[in-house]
Image (cartoon, rainbow, N blue to C red):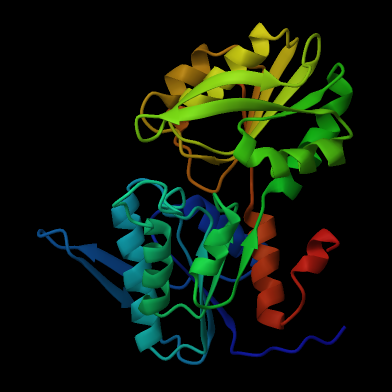
Length: 320
């Protein structure tokens, strides 16, 4: 098959947020990471310098924006501007986890829509395109004033779960909240299981209290699905509700392992058989529990980069 290259050669750059994932993507593509100096001055200002010219090339900047959020976000913006000023052919911001994605609407008086601000900053810094994964809400795609690919790790997670199904007894998918119900239904359809829901209400600007379970889990193996686990308060409450309703076994499956504050202690104490997640953000050794399985998104991101570079469909990867 003849491919049409629209720009120069692929060049990969990475900030300091997730060197392991950057290396995996580099290995998948067979393209080395380009050299870059990132220096922090005593006044905490950052300085960036490329080791070589990227003029006219098809450049991809790999940077997740989990903790330290503001350091990682500023690194991304400064790297993007540095490359734009070097007259690259096309500049794509690859952000597996986008910070501030939960701030996607004015749900109270006198509050910001910070996800829109972050999208604007990435564009102003020089990005021509973006690639990201599992945004908290679909409308965030519209916050970007330039095109991109909003991917989902659903395909990675469901392939693993399909292989695990024979080990489960009468499995049922449980959406961790009603906001994740549509994506939960996608899991239930592909796994050919019933679907149940956790109904919860939020209190005190973010804290969540699980309230009720809609559906039947008694005597069944439960797979609780969600997009992100931060402090693990909500997801551990969901586990308790499922257990109280008679669940035989409980597994978790989620995309973004933010795992801040007391998350690891809560997950370790919860009655969970397996914690299934991905490496959209780095998980340090001290946060890797014995029952945790971490799937790599590097092959997916690498293939999307290759197809974007060659001007081929990304949707065909997922039979869309």
